[in-house]
Amino acid sequence: TGRIAVEAGACLSIEAGTVVKGEAGAGANSTALVVARGAQLKAMGTQALPIIFTSIADEITPADIAAGNYSGPNLAPTVNGLWGGIIILGNAPISAQNANDQDVTELQIEGIPTSDPNGLYGGSDAADNSGTITFISIRHGGTNIGEGNEINGLTLGGVGSGTTINNVEVVANQDDGVEWFGGTVDVDNILVWNCGDDGLDTDQAWNGTVNNFIVVTPVGGSAMELDGPEGTYTQGPNNFS
View 1: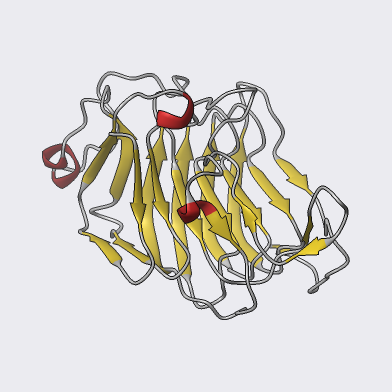
View 2: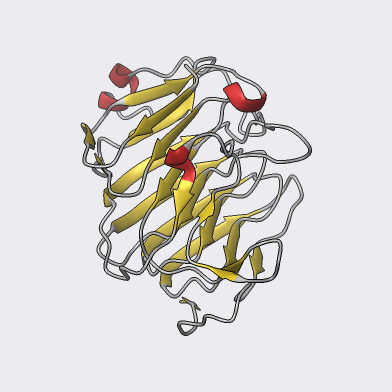
C-alpha cells in the first residue's frame, strides 16, 4: 500500500514465482516500488517461475504460476492504471538542467513528490549497481499522480551498467512501458504490450543497449520515443538491436 522505498544500503530480494500486488492509490499516495540510489533490487525469476508485479484486483496467485498458468484470470490485457509501477534509481550520469538552464548531476524522478529524498537519481558512477532483475512481468500499472503525470511500468533513472536487467514484460501500463532517464544500463529481452503511451522511451543521454525487443501497440501510443541530452553533458549513443 502506498509508495514503498528500498532505501540506500538495503537490498530487497524477491523469490522466483512470487506475485507482488499493489493497492490502488491516487496522487502522492499512488502505489509504487521505489529502489533508491545506493539500494538494490534482486528480483530473480526464472522462465518457469517468473515474478509478477500486478494490481490487487488481479486474482492470479503463485499457485497459478507454479502450474504454468501465467495469464491473469480476471483482468483483460487492456485494463491499466490500477497501481503505480517499479522505479529503479541509481548514481550513473545523466544529462539534465534546472529551471535556470544550468547543468545538474541529479534530479527528482517523475512520479515521486519532491518531498521524498528517495526519488533523487543521477551521479558520477557509470558502473553503479542497482541489483539484478530477470524474468519479471509488470501488469496493469501507470497510476496518474496528477496533471497528466503517470508512472511508467519500469522507470530507470540514472541506473548504472553494473545492474543486470533482462527478460522484462510490461502489459497494459497507462504510461510508457520502459523509460530511461540517463544512466548506462543495458537491457536484454523486452516485451511491451498494450501501453497507453510509448513502448520504449529514452531521455537525458541514456548510454546503453537494448538487445531483442518487441513492442505491440493496439491501444494507441507509439513504439518508441527517443530523446537525447537535456544538458551539455553527453556520454555517447544508445543502441537498439
